[in-house]
Length: 375
RNA sequence: GGGGAGGUUCCCGAGUGGCCAAAGGGGGCAGACUGUAAAUCUGUUGGUUCCGCCUUCGAAGGUUCGAAUCCUUCUCUCCCCA
Image 1 (cartoon, rainbow, N blue to C red):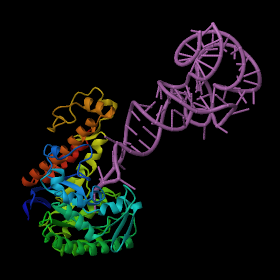
Image 2: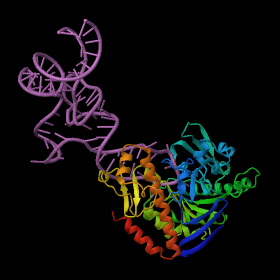
Image 3: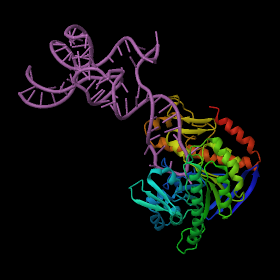
Image 4: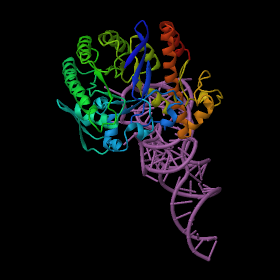
């Protein structure tokens, strides 16, 4: 059940109740593709960084160790020892990112495993089956995330196919949730809107999938190369075509600024690889902008990454120390950066929720974005 | 004492007459990264008045139109034998 506690313009302060607990929205979901956050973070770290929802990937866990294996071991929650909500992405993004290793057909997608080259097939039913075996809190519909530079007719065909797949996903998850040995019989299903940057395709698709009365709706296929202006325009045009009383999830986005802009446009779920990847690469977020801790200027900098931050890294270590660890290729260096960045993101969401509750969102957002540009 | 191998740009290391300011690593300096095939990738790394000129391949001298590359001497390092 999803309830809206407060609206401030289009920005929503909500609460999604799940079998694994409550999700306060807007929320940032912390990406742990292979049931771990890259940079050596596991469930032992997640509470410390303020994580509400962990996100794992259907394709990757199907390839290794195998969803059947995880099911035998009691499901993903038990496997990774994280008992709060987990969202599993459907494998749709791998159609985009593993572009050279797959072939799309009406019935689904044939992949050559990026691990050992073996042939794999994932269609809507297979994706739902895998996610059911994992027992995640929220399953994502199997969609095609198309390259946004492809021509209009391709995008239209792709979106139509994604709709047909979505109907199959919905039927399949109902069937699976009713089975005796299903790990999470209350697994939720979010549908995914596509359409690249074409207003009419996006809006028509949004309306069609809204009629399916799913548990939530995602907007996919953004932040894949188009300009920020195009992304914000698509949100302006598309979010109003999705049901307000359902969670709205902008997949794979984004920078702190992207998130602030999208919340204002009605989005309340986010996930992004950036804070973890940038952290591993020594780039850390602060309220005054992003720093590259590899830079020589931090050699003798005894201050913490962000003086205003209460994260486990900032309350203990200096920029100079973390820079040394990064330069020395000590795993701790990237781990401290990833911890800081994810804490920064999750804390940003705390502030966003408060700002909406107090109906001060617009001013908050402006000041925040202004701050990011200071350094 | 005798014999052998070798000293290359910050480091390791290729190069044995012109296409060499000198391959490739490493290190240094910077940049990128948006539902993770990413602890990855890219650029740059002698000086300068930068499509040119100057300095550099252990040192000094020589051969040549031209040398990191050939010759002579010196010097240092390593290995083997005594």
